[in-house]
Image 1 (cartoon, rainbow, N blue to C red):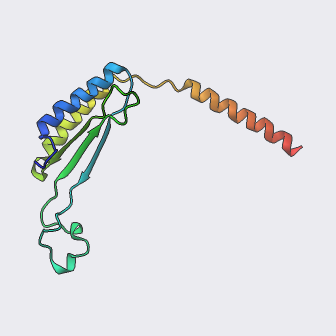
Image 2: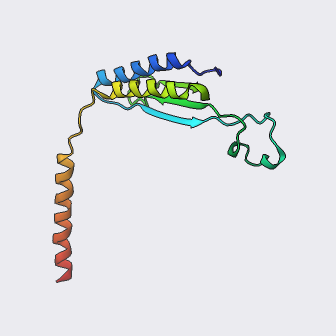
Image 3: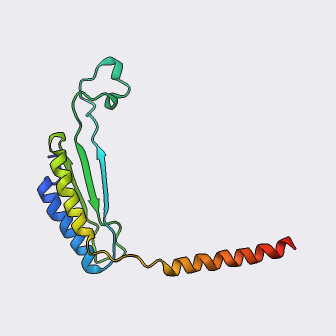
Length: 137
């Protein structure tokens, strides 16, 4: 593993605790991102691929997975940053477990009440329609 990255198992444990922390507070966000790691500049690349070596990799590239709790609004909570590197041969197993952890973390979420927002939007449209009729006269 690279410096600063967690092992895959440790990442799942910490991600689960991050979801649990958000569920206990009854609010908050967990941001999940992923990207493909690129080659090191020291990697030997053919001359025709000098400009864009990642377009034709000779071997499958690993994936970097990150999770954070976002910016904390109060001074007591610290920003939590998690990351792990998934090798190409372990991707399928990783994403199966990743999906389970994410589903478990989202199971306690409440459905957002959008009725107030819909009423405000309808009222705004009625007001604009009424105002638009007066301009035409």
